[in-house]
Image 1 (cartoon, rainbow, N blue to C red):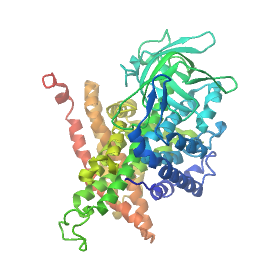
Image 2 (image 1 turned 90 degrees about the horizontal axis):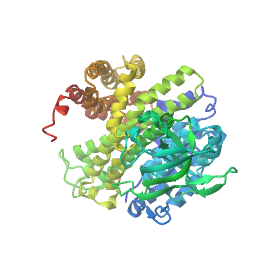
Image 3 (image 1 turned 90 degrees about the vertical axis):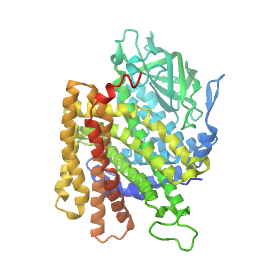
Image 4 (image 1 turned 60 degrees about the horizontal axis):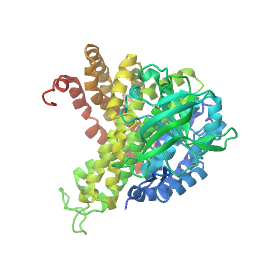
Length: 598
């Protein structure tokens, strides 16, 4: 059976030593009173909940799955899931970073991000139920009318109700301009919505008395394509004027998907038959509102793979220390045993260090983005808010795609450490691999994220956002450029930063002549950009660790940080050279392939 220990020390290292979040929060009136002790206490309790409440349900929930009563359209979740959610609500966890105006605790998003990493490590499928609610909350908080906010946000904040996002239709995935769901205006200002949605995570369950669906649909006079999409809030049960629940709405679960992983999350086929909905935002402007939820979900999906990377690494490490197999190539290490533990073998260490590096780099990026979101939403300086928003927009597709690609590498490498035992259920590793696989697919496939990064976030603004990130690298180089002990961490990042400008310009010129060149280069480009970001963050972690050691700190934690950073730059970062070469190879061999793909 697997085990899980929340990585509290690493989270505290990032928050208090690398990013010094409480110092940053001093400039924000909303968070000025948040101190390290408060953050640490919350993280400790969050870790206990994840490890003691949801983690023990992960394997049993995967085996049991969800069950639909086709007569009542009600879904029963696995044993213990509903009770765990009740504990989650009782502990106030749904409200952690929500607006105090609606009953939230108003803590920084950095803390909420750490909570969800631990929940994802413990049980990704369970975590998706409250996780999607947070996205619905964000969309209504940003674009809902005061009336809608008063009606729905307090219950979403408390966790009394949950939320979903209903986008995908059977014929229409990423290309939302093709969706067919219809919304007919009614005399009372509401809308009757008819259509079918698929792949709706947490679309039906027994956790709460009501589910608040955010639904994309078309008005009768809507223009074609994505410019004709509106967003509606469609509750499972209608809400009376006094806030009590009314009649059952015409939205229900018509079926559950049969899946490779996340089996204990109810991935629902949603049917709408004259379902009553209310417009969110302006007519035909639904994508603008929904993108708030989609971007939150994309950051959340990266966090899912981060969680799985961490728990898979922990279990692979424990197994490698215990499993005896062969003798070390450099001589016997465990003389009192019939064989050495497999952790002595170089290739096993390569796999373990790959997972550990991707966990530590991913956690640094997730924490960095969460801090940028806190600044974007709460900093009094408009320029800081604007710069933070630009960086979050740039980094969002990297978080989603790079962290989930890395999560796939890390979980499969961790499974490989187990050899044949990793392929069977009792060790739990095959579930981490299966659960992680969806993260590269939903909320926009990673190929779509790559197009978004290169096409919109970089070329779309002539590299302005990329240049802002480049300034962060330049600042670090200025601080540490003459420090010989930092050169092994700084030099590779500085070199790639310089190469990135030429690399981006070259692809941009090719794309002006043939847009397919952007599509051909985008996936490789995103991975190069991901390593640039990771390299910067690993350099910052090394900087803090070297200073701690120089100050006489003997905690082996800092030595371990430097060892992981050295492994990352020696064994993982160099793939950027190959990626830039394959990106520059262009699209001809891809597009001139009709005979091969006939």
